[in-house]
Image (cartoon, rainbow, N blue to C red; front, side, top):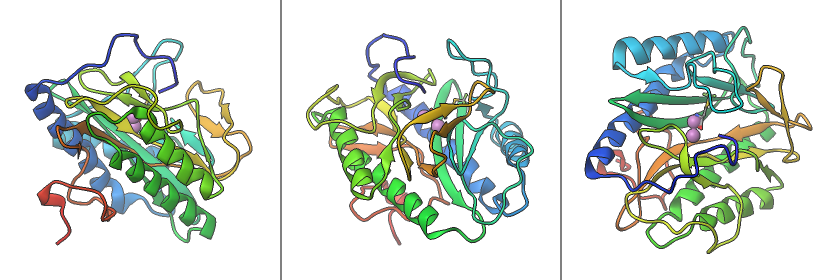
Length: 282
Ligand code: MF3
Ligand code: CO
Ligand code: CO
């Protein structure tokens, strides 16, 4: 969500009951992406991907798509169940008639609600034959997300996460979007803290066990500036360069972090990341 549009309450420390609910919601969100993966092919429309995800959520999972009719202050109600952000769309792309063609890259961002708890995760999909640039931007963005997550533990600061993401992205020659950030999440879709994907080590909030927030870097191949489209939601790169994003919902544990948005179909995870035993490499 956009910077500075969340409530000014303080950061919620989740109860064991909340954490149990968030584990379930997180896994379900990831499973929507597992389900949709084989459909993300040349010729499909973003509207069809939305329709399939929506039906899976409601009819198979018994989850509610959080984006549908979501209406933060200053916005119009979001009209669809998922976000589909293609090529130079940074985030909040609205599914519609757009046909995916070979060489396109698309981020599918899924947020489900189960028993009142939100699970929020997104992945990139490269359609057909991807360009070298698109592959590299995707890989760098994926690494940015994991490097950020790897910093999470009690006593660390949010600035530690932002710093490592910014450093890695800029070293690759890319830029970090500033206007949108990760967010606290639980019974509320977007709550404090704001998780910037840039910054300085040791700055911003200190992390405590029981916090849950997303890490969702948006990285542009060109300049970082954004353009807001007339539909009230879609955000594109100003210079029309490619943009990529990956997202997880993460719990701060006593010893580090627990990624809540994993599932059986998740792509390979870097070796330096600790994952629950069920997701460990076989
Ligand atoms: N899922 C997005 C996020 O990661 C938010 C989408 S809001 C919507 O924060 F209304 F566009 F769906
Ligand atoms: Co999010
Ligand atoms: Co999201």
